[in-house]
Length: 89
Length: 518
Image 1 (cartoon, rainbow over the protein chains, first blue to last red):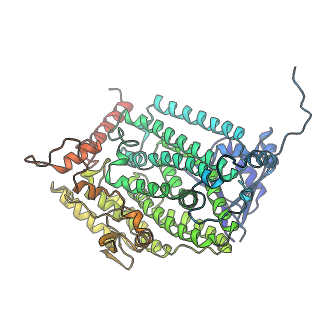
Image 2 (spheres, chains in turn red, blue):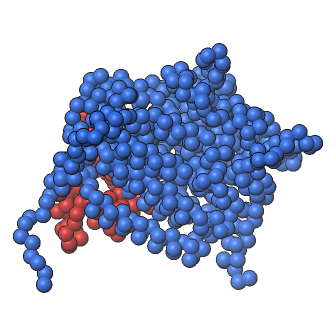
């Protein structure tokens, strides 16, 4: 199984996003670097709109992720409710 | 009065479908192949452009909205940086050499990428890739502009920032390395461009360029660079996805595409890795405070992440490029070999160089236990010894350049790090030299392209790199001084050692003023 990852700028916008990802993806690993936070996971990683909305208390459009996104690894599939990264091998 | 909308809003997938399906039309005044003359000559077969799917599904309204927000954030930080003398927060003004390398070597490429993606968008007959290329083209010009704006703050205080993004890329010898990489890609067809830039550069290699550069900037107190870097990076995820999508699309459209795509992957992986040897040097030598060694970054971002990618592409029959075997050896050598060359040609550089101090050499020994003490420490110590006697060594002849990557012939044989690697090819009765099996292979495949390379050393020797009206026959003619003038490098200010430079003196004086009541 290969590792997928996603990295964001470290700031107040991304703190609840990172919390949601860690909660929704058991086994995912947090890697904090200068000004950047990276989450690694084996095989796949899913980001759920609902989990982020619960934490920030407002509507959230998953495309807002792009403002603070740094890099990703894996195939992306995005719809209105989820943003999924995976390696299919 | 607010109007209540009854109709449910369109979902992401529907919105994207409306933008990229059914908006195209059949041409009637001209046949399709005349409207899209570059779509077929490379041999890539496409049967159904509608199979192209952009996983981000970004529509134009969302694109403008998020890009505008990124710009507002960026320029707020740049104002704060300028208002608060942010440049005095740097670890050490030596760091600025890394920024100068970025401004002169990378920012102009962003601009070429802008033009290249505009051209690719124009040349693809499919609507999906056309829209994605349009967005990337706009992103790239934004990157060039924001980088120049951010770094112009340094131009108010330090040497060497005056001509980088526009003038020097065409003239300075080591900048022909990144320039020729993009020229090579831009002069290919639209599909090869996508593999070269969209896939190899953006997907396989971009993390090695941006993540260490920006973490390095954060480590060294350079808020301006971190901010434009991350602002640009937020677009990269979209670019990476486009590159990966493009390769999957080509491979799924027709089995005949596989050998063509494989050849391009092999070529552009090697081309990209050669360009990145400048980044390797930056990470190991130019950051006063280091984030990680080049070797460590290579292992995380290339060996692990690239490995996952190639495992995934194996289902299409794609093989890991052959050059990777050599890269496993090279990762312990290239940064040292390049920095030694830059230090001994420091009088012809548009930035300051320096010999690593004792602490830095210990860090390099620890990070490169197999190679640094054995092959490179003795050479730096010899250079230091000469410098201490007032005989700082600068090479006064010009090196032979590789006909493909344009890097001086400084890399060593894969099985002997004490022997310079030379390869030779013959074409139409002339000899051409390359630095490695990888570059020789690329040359031999398309000699008619690479014999046209504009090699700075050849051009200098032919007398093409002096200001207009220069008379090389006058007594006491100094070709180097004239070359520097032609490059807009101010001799004694922009070049040579950091030790004793005006950048060093000014940074110390201004920081002193900032921390004392004088």
